[in-house]
Image 1 (cartoon, rainbow, N blue to C red):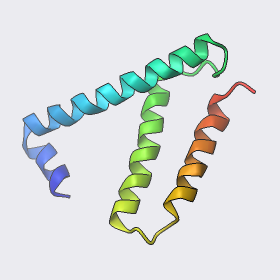
Image 2: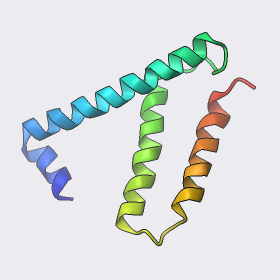
Image 3: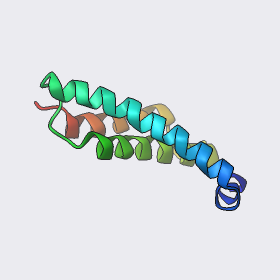
Length: 91
């Protein structure tokens, strides 16, 4: 919570975090573009889909950090992978 407060109060922190997320999205988008070009992935918007993937990973990780007993982390990660790939793979 302190971290989120700092983002709202300190422009430098917000910009640093934004830069990291931008880098994550760009890296993820490159993988998606390559998969689309090779015909493995559906023709999705790489920037939007990158944000979706990061949101899923962040959300699951955040919940687990607050309460490790909420779910089986390994099993939920398997499900997240399935959800991402089910909507991404062409076949």
